Image (cartoon, rainbow, N blue to C red; front, side, top):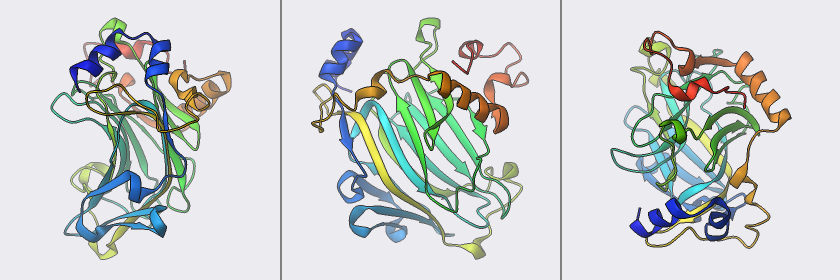
Length: 294
């Protein structure tokens, strides 16, 4: 990031940031216009005039794409239909990330499984190159039968992970107690489909069945209500409706949202780093001492 943008962000109060860092929006956006295929040769395809993107994986390679824009805070929505059938060993990802050894990252990863067994949805947050903040879930539906919407809300106060607009996780800004939080590095949207059968399914015990290849995941109807960043300048707006669509700037959970979060975490969470006392014998991380339902 340029020093001018960093200084603006570090000194700017939230209200001023709302004015200078207006929101860009892409409703049901165009993959041809807004994304680049970054690897996989012909395994990644943009179809239907830019309205649909598919990634495929075979024994030789997976595939992936990334956004042309970088974003500094916003709401990102993507509809995804995951690999069907025996998807054991495969990982489908949707995440935000900056670059470098001290990068920031906000992750959705979907770990495949054998036919009839549920996917594991893996979430994580990295700041200044450090992650280790994993929470994992089963889903309350079959994510291979239809498209479902996976969303990241990222503002100065918190990160909210949502599935079909139901909150599944909130990661609060706890910089006041020394916990790093992504606030200064612009991030691109990334997605990929790749083979990870050394760890993805039952810790690597179940390998990818290549007789089922190619494996395919599909993407559509992405939406970005976000602060679009460019080098040497503050974030700029590409939408005339930026004030109308700026609710993500201070988005939090109301009572209904907290109830839905509690429902998901009580019924579908299968791993939470905050309760893994074997992993943290000296005590749980500082941010875990705050209620996860706030």
